[in-house]
Image (cartoon, rainbow, N blue to C red; front, side, top):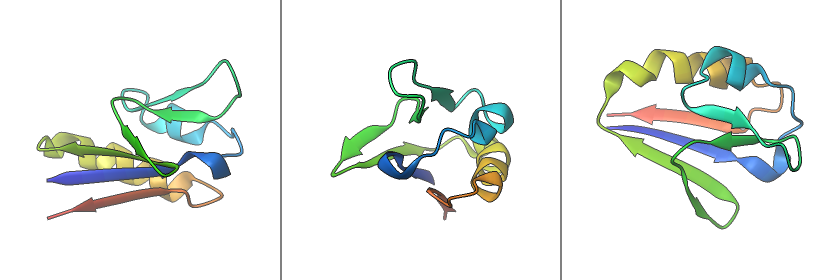
Length: 76
């Protein structure tokens, strides 16, 4: 399982995650911060759990590119 976590409140709106993984991240028109598509919110953290391992590489690249390190990608 691939688990992607976004700490949205610390987002600075740089857009790198959207450029690298547009199928999983999108910029909000309301506040200019990223949104983890299909993510479930809990206490300010947005989490997406998927059995699709094809998303792993693009999401890892988005995580590495994030200047404020608010994207976590784990898998087992």
